[in-house]
Length: 396
Image (tube, rainbow, N blue to C red; front, side, top):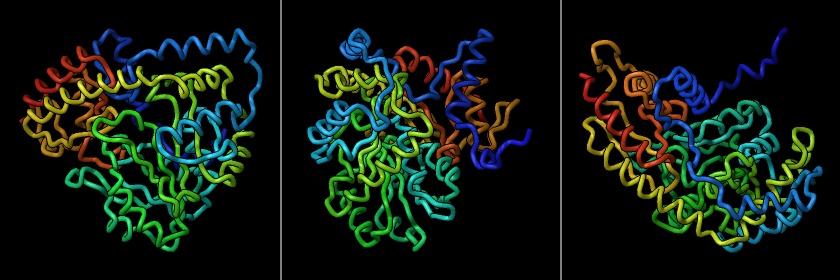
């Protein structure tokens, strides 16, 4: 059977590949500490689970509207106003099966074959894959650890061409944890104002996991709001990864286009997850803030440990729950059995030598780094750092 050619344009995400490999090794009885997946280790708060049970008891078990329950879209509007100062109406919101589907809907609705899409690196692995599925052309803007992996206005201006249709970024960023300040977004907005043909996808799924400042959205600038698609969801800030609910806020025309696509792909999102999400968005956020406090403690520990390891260069992530150390100094080194030639070798060395699972940085557009998630227990992190330190000391 001949498979479709479009499959040749994408590969399995490295994050999922490494998690799968970790599970296989665990099944063999090997004690693997998995730092590959970005999944909070906390349980979904009880009041959200109670809302799901209540929804079933109340009969919310039928098909749902493709765009999502009106009550949920109203709750999202309330959240966007309360937390971000953004004014949206329910017909400017569409609910999808996770933020990943929100991204897919949006990109497939906007990108035609040959359209150019700007993506600053490092970036989340799925951005480029979705552009490739849409037959667009990705133009990467390489950002380094020296600028905290952030895009500057000068870099953005130099990258935009007459063919540029779309710009995709995240803040807080996966994989670097970098967070754009209001001043930094203001400077980027000035560039976008000069290029009205460029639409903007702002992935804000890590909004609540912000350690130093208030979250800032690029949709706050009136001159840009009508061409910004804000992507968000329940997974990270509410420990609801398995509930699979995301949303997009943006222009009505784009929402209607996404509704048309989603109506053919998946239709409406799970009814129980939607009712639980209403409760999550409108309730006290104390459980979220408690998670962030724990993530901050873990971040401080992991970054301190990595900074003390010879050969590691690391930035301080201001958001999300990842460390993205530069490990280039280990290229060419060997423990006598394994020689590290690149980031993939490094990740596999840690997996088999230290039994710690990470993700190679090339998957995110920077092959001098690896990504480690600290969304796991402090006990796991302490053991993982001990193992990594020991394994790196053997590389000469």
